Image 1 (tube, one colour):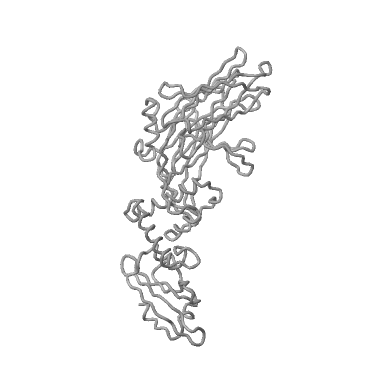
Image 2 (image 1 turned 90 degrees about the horizontal axis):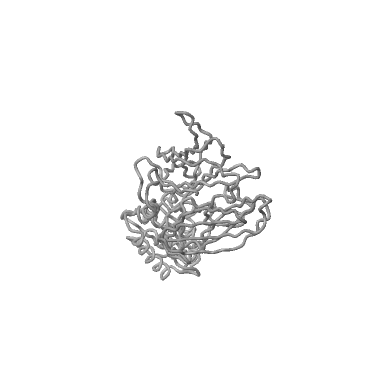
Length: 451
């Protein structure tokens, strides 16, 4: 059985306590200076029959310390695997895992870093030690791992549980097998509101004398109640064969599940056990716009952060989770709940749409942008610029803020069609004046009005 480990004292907990610990992992540290993460070890055979060990590990971004660098924010995790030699540990695998994010809000989001360490097992070793250290914080995670190879007569590999299985011939992910990406889920936690299936990947190893048709049984129980007990024939016409099975999450309630997958070929029978956890209530998602692209445009009014480099590859739910994390950050930074800041922005969007519309929604105009970010101005001056040599007249407005925001904005209806454009700003680093703003105001404009 491939085991999951959280923290350094999880082994003796009951199933119910394990589930609670998993669900509370995002907000509770096991102990000071302990790096919270999940590890899932899996054994497979290579073409020569040697046992290949995959150690999949998952670290929530919120448990790492990111440092600002030139091109983003980075955490560095020193990952090593050791074997005991007398009173010492000999490192047999060591890597520096650099975790980079382009937006600092990801550091407090629900996202995780997932990676894999792989190597062949030595028959003379039955115990390994996994260690991961966040070099920026000094937090450490350690755990012993069963290092025994698969027996020569083993018919089944260990079972890898995946959240996503998709065709992928481009990426260089360690989780690719051929042209298919099997995204491992070391936490073994699956949110039914996000995922339609729990995916199982495994391999069969059948000697030529046993090749033919086998009988497989997928058995799942929860709280000693049978949830699934399916039998099906499987063609085993090769020494090594990959299998992909699915467990629909729509049929499952929240809780802890225990599964058994068995394969019978003639008189030979082998079973593999696995556990997984279903959550029914996903993390709250906060958004105002139905279209994530428009939501991203709205959030740019408050943050200068660039769009994530892989934004175009996000699915809709991932985009919403990313955007939701920014709303949470903005609310926290302002000392407000996420619901409160959303209500404020929503009211301002509605005001902008009602008063600043011009062939497009008012919130997308220059006036709408400034109003949504700062609210109503403390002082508004409206007047007309007379410029007989160039234009008959141009309406303009000066908005002045004198509270926490101390800034001045000048909008000019350049084409006299209701589309006021921002031409001058002072006191706002997120906006800039047009280099030729005097041309719009005219030579006779009294610049003291901007004080």
